[in-house]
Image (cartoon, rainbow, N blue to C red):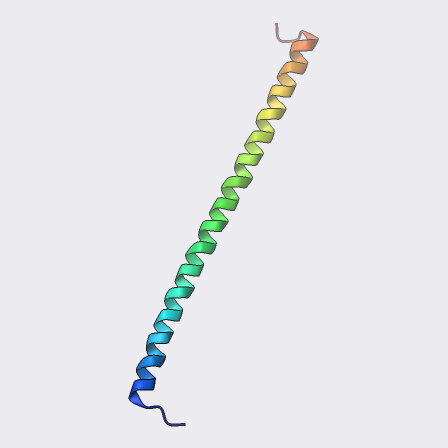
Length: 66
């Protein structure tokens, strides 16, 4: 198969576009991963907060704090 010069340039420009798309995709996946991590940690913190408040009130009822 013989490639003409015009076809060759098209091929290279497509390759560059494809690379750019892949880079964008990778950035998006990294951001999603970070967001997912942040969401996970925030949920964990909320659970801890709820748990600590719950324990505080149970101790308050028992009269062990005051």
